[in-house]
Image (cartoon, rainbow over all chains, first blue to last red; front, side):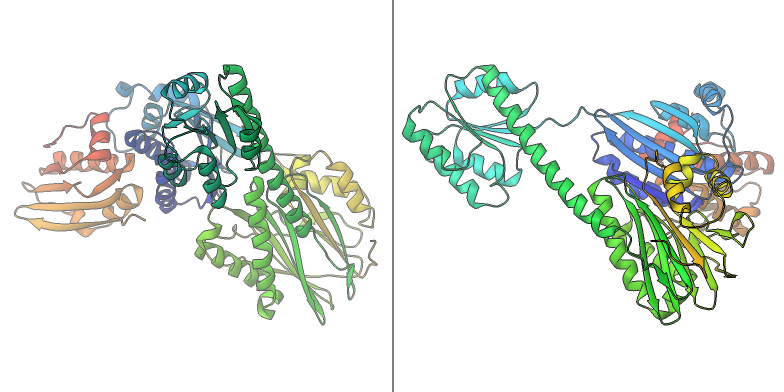
Length: 499
Length: 102
């Protein structure tokens, strides 16, 4: 994924979007003119949503994904759906049907500028996708070093369909080229004038940037002594001439596959360790409050984080949902954990959830390192005398159950952190013994209903009886098919903890 | 980050609107609020200079269309100069004449 960001549904954000997309599109192997066409098309679409979305969306998220030979640019928003959009787009695709006018030309431009569009309602969001063919996927780069032109020609003929071959007839030139642009695989002869293959391999091993590049010797020096000497240099294969196509290609494929496996395993290991470190660790109780938590991390990507701080007669906690996929997103979640924990160290922020989210929002907006992440959150400060001060930032609303009545959303709202604007408005709830609050990540409600997650969750909770220690296990069972991380924190006032 | 701004100046019997950066909905919104855009004397010219414009969208085109129609009604002339790159391609794509005299 090249970009995944949420934008505020404002005209000014269209410029921000263009500024961010432009360099990314330029690196995708499409012409400058096509970059401009796509920027214009996405700008028209963005402006159209801002101007005409009814109800007006609260956000527009943009993702840019390169999938082999297709570049896919997607805009998602939670505003009103444009009926018959594709039919109108088709009608507007004829330039003759779009005369010069003061308005209404955007659709025609989109139709003329974009190779393929797709518009549909997906759960609670509208999804508009543009597809653009791009240059074919990158072939693995292979450096081939041999002073014999016949061998180079033969090897190139064997491999050029699946690999990008870079040929060199001497080791010194090859070393410089490898240092300047490391390939995925090096295939080298041994017996060469000036510098031989053994010396070249030795030098590559001394440089940490080239030492781990997979390496194959392809030589006519077929003796036990040479093979022994070469094997001591931590190579991946030792092939002898004459070589068959099958043998050479099989060796290259196997070695590159193994290299990818090792890299992925390393990434997976990093991911597991970080995921474990992000697992919520809440105290079972804080004064008259009991705290129960349901946590299920199913994705290798972003993640839910629960952080807290207690001090004397209050406890402050925040549930963050860091969106994204892959190890980089998990690392961002890890970074957020440290970042927010440091904010909680400030008494004023810890005791005022609105100020905490406001400060988090300000820092995210100011710090370019978080530009590619999307985070939502809900924060609460619970005092021992029964006050619950709540604030949300683009996150599902907390749910409240008073005594024997039903669960209801706390009427509260706040923009996703990092979008600018004022801090969220807090709401203070005076809790009575037996009252309960539930903070949830979006994965829970969306498992029950993509279109009305909050309603579905409330209905499920209200069908389940009292909010005792069995509530979270019931939630766990009901949402077990989630494809997303699920986190719920049950906060009960004047009730014993159940863990 | 691209800088976006415009300037309004007098040039003989004409009003010059020079647009730098984006000629988009934001720019159009700001331009429409300019007092100089409200009263254009008959017989004069309005010159839109796009030589420093690096991006134009349908809002920019729509603004030019509205200026052109106003000129026809009010008796003044619209000229577009300096279009290059993306803005030139867009004007060509939609069939806008290189110089439009109203």
